Length: 231
Image 1 (tube, rainbow, N blue to C red):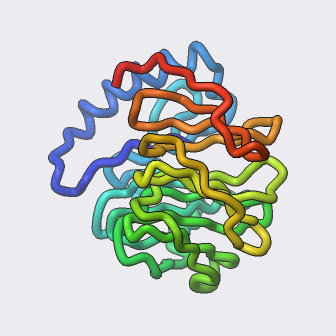
Image 2 (image 1 turned 180 degrees about the vertical axis):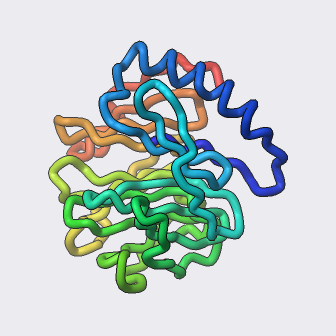
Image 3 (image 1 turned 45 degrees about the horizontal axis):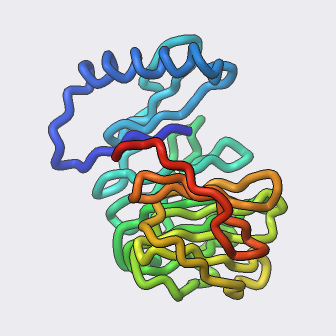
């Protein structure tokens, strides 16, 4: 799933955007072959689908009051969208209908992830993580506190046992995904903007110092730092 978000105040020429975006996607598709399955793309509150070498505007899913920041997909093809309006909306994409609205954060939401059981996790500028165990039918179940800044990144480890969060407080925090207890805090020295889980149990995180850091969760140490990006 690819997310391209804009604030509502931005004036966007959608036709021009489609043209520019199409060339970028075609170039990426030629290198990766990711066109085997339709890919959901969010552009300025429009839901687009990239399939068969073209972009089409399938549906308009409009209910957020501010820009959409993140999209995640459930196994049943429903999706959840997070927004700067502090809300999460669960959508039935095929029917184009809103399933549920989740409210609990006090500020913009910047990160979402889903575990194998369908539990939804959200991180916000209010410095909290909310756990929604039944996001399609009910409200929040747990609020995880500890970060001292915006929670920009969330990820579940591949064994589904740990939740990892990253923030502009320059730390990664590791939580037990079953008990929701905090296991450890790892200082990485930069704002964390993205997190991915690796097969060996480590994580890789992107940060605002232009680096990718590989962090061993067992030793709680940075094992490698890859610097190639210029900004």
